[in-house]
Length: 285
Image (cartoon, rainbow, N blue to C red; front, side, top):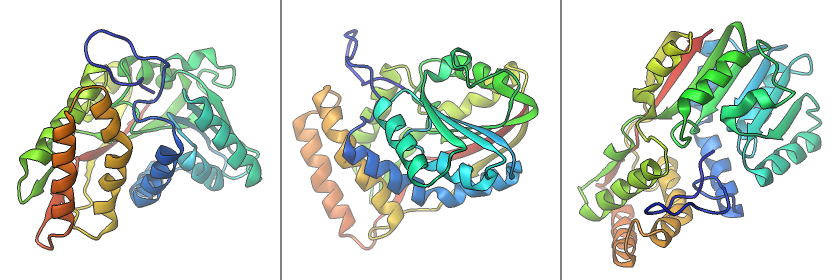
């Protein structure tokens, strides 16, 4: 995954997932997985994941999707989750042991260097899955190339990620809201990520010898105050906006103005939010 965003040319230290690996972010990721699990399982069903399959979860984080995969593929299958965050990998391995899912294992690794892992032999995986990973990595071409090498002939790469993230907006329109969304997208780009990654991913996949089988938008519709989809970005603000202010992408005044505007919007029964567009892709080797 990506590293902490910085302004200018000063590198961040230590290397870390752009949104952090603290307990609050762990809880947010669990909520996020639950909220988007219907879309994930629909994609997995479309791709034909079944018992006995070997699945590679790239950018697995704390392993929420991987553990679902383990239940689907069963003991005859295998799931390997990889992530750069050692705390998340430790959490995922602990969860697999606690649930007696011995066929699910997790390893710390760079997604662009899968070949360095002895568990990732060329041409051995039926499925590789990436969700909210490629928008953060500085070299998505290298990640896709590494995944393509790991897939069996006929194996499938499944991706769910953003396209035009910075079109996220609210009604009534809000300058304070749009200022922060633009700053979020800029922080990702400055750090080598791409919040429009799904616009370029099909070309990347084809250039790596994959066949595009499916592309579609995941559309949960507008989010309204009081709904779980409204609460989804709400959990993100608390985790990421202090980091955004810390690294100078928004001023303390802009941060305060956003929070005041969000509180007003959350109490407005006429308000709604256009969420950042999510797309999905299936590409076959």
